[in-house]
Image (cartoon, rainbow, N blue to C red; front, side, top):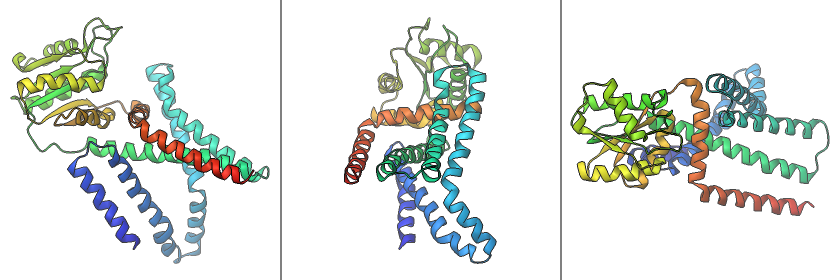
Length: 337
């Protein structure tokens, strides 16, 4: 029976990914499928393997009971290492510490668990309180892992059609200068355009309070300066947007004029592509995303920021789940008072 259920979820994951990959519910389906496969491996497959050797059996049981704290400690160590590099490269900014916040939370839960188990006798109320925070942390880790894996899958999704338009999403200027992160998007878009010279290029981004010109204007100027083979008549500027949603909303007006009812692409950095695709779907734009390269040291924190933004996008669902779990633990807590 369990294999039928797993086969169903694997088939469902593939189906929703092929039919419409630009949906957040796909992340949950992928996460459930990965969780079930891991559970089956731990509960059904590994015990059969351990029958062959007592030493293997001992290792298995040690792994089974220690996998969560060990995994949390390893992951937390990686978060601190990654954040250290990011601070050295990008400066001491609060947003560069987001990924390490996961590490602090994970170490805190592990320490709390061992203190309650081996130092003192925890009351039923204290155990319920620990359960409350532990399950919330595990949910966040489950969703973060699922989102990251799905975003990577989406990034490597092949485009099987010729795009009629290519939208380059803005990401901020330094005065009027295009920074490396934004330059990588422009260069990637131009590479795609060279293979599809009939497509129009739309540089999308308004002017921020600390910017001397609009992002759209600066991106077009950068593209024409560094890529002499571009045809100016195929280049367009959208200079009113202040966020990703507006990037697509206002760019769609240009698309409807130049190539209505056509499929296209949008270009952003690889960590941003999946969330951007949700906005593209929201404005009913027939466009898949293509990711430009990002420095490896920047990715963990960038994915963390994207994850937080996705949680905000689905805030109604997240608040509902949070309140439901709070009520359940409140009932349990009340029962043991």
